[in-house]
Each structure stands twice: as structure tokens, then as C-alpha cells.
Image 1: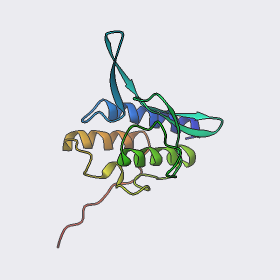
Image 2: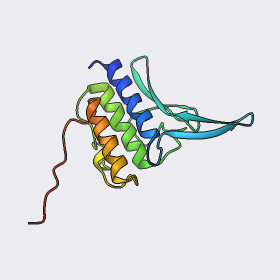
Image 3: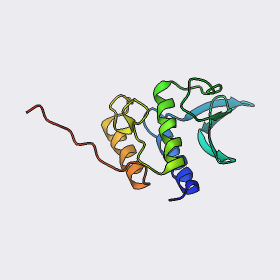
Length: 139
């Protein structure tokens, strides 16, 4: 996959996640009396990766620094996932969980097991997840 194809894959994954469980990456707003739903997306502009926040509608430069995240309306765990997504778009390498939260395999997302499995399976299907976590027993 080239960079544009990886961007498209990540945007499909963001949309997939936004339609399930806790509906991360999705915001519902009322405009002129009508409820509309806005989904986050990633963009490439002049070779740089940006996150378009669904709530603030701001274009956020995605880089691993403590500054430059003005307009990002979600918390640190989702920010880490966005950083992983951006690294994947840039490099095509395995980036899941590289920013310190456990990645899509982490159990703290608050989805049901069924929804979590759907997200993981879809992420594998589109080429984002490249490996399976093997549960180790206590024996």
C-alpha cells in the first residue's frame, strides 16, 4: 500500500469504529434544528498528516509533541490511537500501540467483547493490524 492507500484505509477504520460501541470519532450536533453526525478523518496536506476533529472541525497537525494539538477534543488514549494511525499512514509499518496505551487490542476501550472483536477483525482486514496478541496463561 502507498501512503494515499494507507490514508484511505485508516479513514475507513475510523468510520468503522465510529459506527460501533462507544462510537469514538463521531460527534452529533444540531444545525438549523437538524441533528447531523460528523465523523473524524485524517488528511494529507503537502505531505503532512492532519486529523480533522469532528467536534471542533479544526485541522490538527498530528505529531508526537505536547504542543500543536489545539482543536483536538478527545482524550489522551484516543490521541495515542490517532498518533498510531498517522505513523501507519506515513510509514506503512506496524504502529499499533506504539504510543503507550495498548492499541486496538487494549481492553480499556469500553466496548463489548463482540464489538471489540469486530473492530480488530476489520483492522486486520484492511491491513492496519499485522499480528495477533497471544494471551499467556498463568501456568
